Length: 391
Image (cartoon, rainbow, N blue to C red):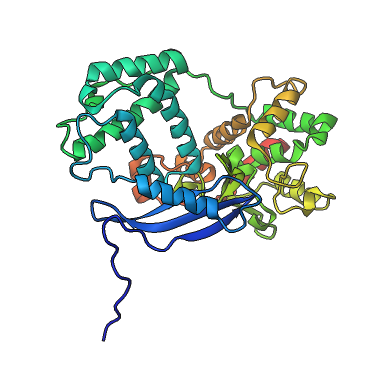
């Protein structure tokens, strides 16, 4: 006799609601829900931070309210030419969130959606001609710049594709709206050569202001690895293998709406999860740091002065305050990433090695298919040691 298994939900019915405490007074409620198209999906909502909400009732109330309003994008008859485009934008955002888009990406898209709504709130699907949509994008660009306009175009395209899939529109009108190009070429962060990097690290160690702000060690680690700043500030002592002289990059720091600063156990891309070999000067720095009071006693390598996760923006502000005195007024945290990439290239190492070191998703289709990925490249550590020691 076979087991009966879980009984199927009826359309419009939800399963058992579970509540999970996320910390800082925030709960999450989630359940299975069978949409009008017959597909059962996981739906979740978070409650507002409230120290008096001991059991997650606010999160469950928010979830029940969302289920009462829920409509499945693409379900026959639910979308018409009179449907507001802003409704489809919200539906598209929900689909992106359920598909697992990162919280930081969703924060960016939701910010763009709020700005887009100012120019498209009255627009309905039947009004969404290429000319009208182009006017919306032009207005958004004039008010918020080319980058935000690009996000707006992406959201409109995804939203109106829902109407296409529901057979309300025969084609996606956004496809005929030209792509947005920036008026000026981005300058980007400058890269440092080996001599400049040596001089900067020497000046860093001589700066009392840098020691006071705990910038010496994290900047040294950036120069030694080329990590993204969000990856750098997510490093924990448990990620460091002293014997192997490696550090595991296994997460990132992000500020999430309603939750504050969090460590996410996922990187920018799948390739962000990697193990990086450390040059000798980084190993020496970590050995010295581990023996220091407070800094070597925390869970994370580079905590805030209060012992929690370090804020990305605060870290950048602290760096901007000292870089003029260090003689590098244009150097940003991203400059160290570009510097490591430049040193790898100058040493004649392959682009695949560079991509593995920096956690890039692709070098080219050929390399992705035919070259092994995810290796620990000790030769990169050797290159950085030679660059810094000037041997």
